[in-house]
Structure formats: structure tokens, C-alpha cells
Image (cartoon, rainbow, N blue to C red; front, side, top):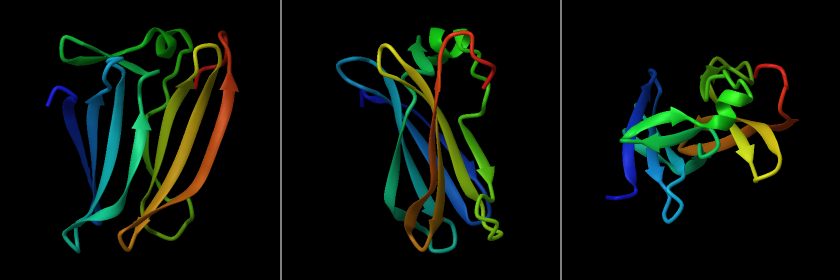
Amino acid sequence: MDAYISAIRLYDSLQTIYIVLLKHYPTGAVNSKVLFYDNLKKEFSDNDFDFNLYALYDLDKGKLIPTNLKTELNITAPEIEITDYNKDGINDYKFTRLYHNGTTNAIETTVLKVSDGKVETLDFQQKWIEYGAESL
């Protein structure tokens, strides 16, 4: 229970996405596990998605606050977007996060397709950034 922060539910007609926010021990870093629920079959997907938010958000008195990196790098892109990446008429999900290894930073985007109980990666990109970069 000490690791659990909260859950966010995103709903559309075919899928419900649960973003379970977690506090990593022993560091206290914020990360999440994304679960996909098929509304028609009434079951969760066989796969989940680790969506690490530690470089974007800190936990302060039970609330998520932007990290210094998110603010200083002027990162304004939404963390989760609904898209039809492969133009098949079914919603896909684009996840955007800041990757930070202590010295370098990159914006990572992952586009996922969810169908038949499986999660498939349609696209993954890393864009390396530095201080003073354009808004993202």
C-alpha cells in the first residue's frame, strides 16, 4: 500500500485505460503501470505498459508536481494522447515522457495499439534534448 499513490481512468467506447501511479522504493520516484481493459470483452489485456514519470513529476504532500527538469526544459506536451496512428479507425495511444539518466535528457514517445487482448508497439522514438531547447 505504501507504493500506491492513485489511479487515473481514461475511458473510450472500446477501451478503458487505468494509469496506476506508484511511488518507487527506496527512491520515492514516481512511475506508473498502465493497464488496458477491453470494455466489450470485460477483461484486462494480457499486457501492461510501464510508464515511468520520475523525470516529469515528483510527489509532494500527496500531489503530483512538475519536476525542475519539466519546468526548465519547458516540456508542455501531453503525457497521453488518443490518436489513430495507423489510420484503421480505432484509437491508439501515444505516451510521451522525459527520459533522464542523470546527465542527458530525451523525449520518448511510444504509440500503442490495443486489440484482441494484446498491446502492440506501433512506434517508438527518442529525441535527445538539452537545456534551452524549443518547447516540447
